[in-house]
Image (cartoon, rainbow, N blue to C red; front, side):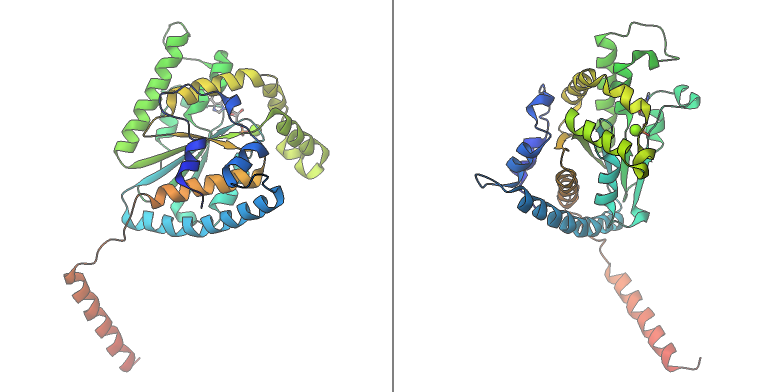
Length: 306
Ligand code: AMP
Ligand code: MG
């Protein structure tokens, strides 16, 4: 596990203005996060990261069981990123050790007509994890201040009014209030922006195009959105600056190295659940007496007929 101070390096401070360009998506920041050596060795670091991911998985499985047993908190994990940043594979790797009954993943796509007939938080409210569970939002209501801010023509069915700075500020305010409500009621929120560089996205798109078994992952709309890269960086900066709060912080995860992103995300989730100091429900003396009685009955049965 790496130390708390290191989490602080990738956590967006509440109330501050963040610049995406201050976070290196690649090896530079990974090295900074993982090593105190002057010249960290990439291969050794990769090896260590994989070990940490394996350890975190075991710890996460234990933490999740305790989360379930204590039935007080829910964990909501929000993943946002440019295409091909590794949202799906991060979910797959980080959650692979967790009991599927304690975990749920929702993918949010272009909203349906029914969804557009409601407020923009509605479909997400319906998908929130209950106490004891880990819920993952693969994309989320943040799309309503990201893709929709890049393409305001997606806004439909709203009351009349100008789509200006105040309009977007009102959305950030609503998101912060919603998340405040959730955390006050026992949902712990972790928000990850998987920060991939434009060059790495190019490489991953090319890989999808060059390998027949990866074609299904490529879509022309991803290519279209790539052309808006700078606009996306700007709306991500706006959203992260406005919505990283004490109660629901954003983490900027260096995502050019998949192994690094996975192990960092796994560690933050595990450390957060552990910090809740959960305990298994206590057994009362009365229950202990009942258990003793049940044990006695079962033992007698084994000695008897049948
Ligand atoms: P994918 O996650 O690759 O299956 O793509 C889902 C698509 O849905 C992405 O292009 C998102 O930008 C888009 N999307 C998600 N939420 C919204 C939204 N609220 N409005 C418009 N598009 C959205
Ligand atoms: Mg896609």
